[in-house]
Image (cartoon, rainbow, N blue to C red; front, top):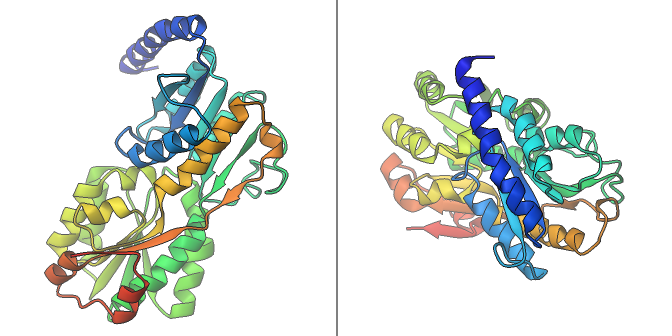
Length: 327
């Protein structure tokens, strides 16, 4: 183990000790939030989670404690972070994303786990079935593959002249590989567009991906839903404007930061039922008896100002479909 990593581990253990003491002394139940992302990238998720908990009568700091662990795109940290949550006695774990969920599943078979993942949870081995999950795990399926395929079609409608559409993915997120090969590549074949798969897990690699794509004639870009990529709102928006590349995002936050168009789930509306399930489990429900929820609310958001900068005219059909149009 590197000296820096050893010092970091010692710091994490030291920080967990007083938390353990407080958890034992407090009458409030404590739930854990284990994420591959960052505090900033999970802000909308936490809004939804807290709203769902409130719907069942739980308010953080009043009758519920929440312990947060962020791996900051370093998946090898997840096992230690999960173990620290168990050590302080959390009674439930919320795990956004497949990597955190798989680690939590491998860490405990008794503590309830609530996931929100983009891949099929049955195929991923998380649950026995959607209606009867079994075991200690249930949660929310975000249908990222189907969403990305639909987003690709919308991007093609927005930029029909695009000869090449890039797909930006994070190679440290293993669930994306299945999404790209199964859904997005299949959709590309049906609409007759050439895809260029680009990989980035660092800021420098994002810069290189845009430089690479900019060499193509009339390119466009689809950014796949991913914790790391979603945390780089400003960088991706600036690069898109600099290179003049129309970009389709998966989250509304990109559009508020100046992005062009997004199609995906509402993070707040996704995590509200996760919070509701958490409250039900705190009141005695068993994860095995709570069916996996699947996304039903998707939102298309368009930024007209960004379109004007790129010299794009938004088709009337897309404007009519949009849930929100930002002037």
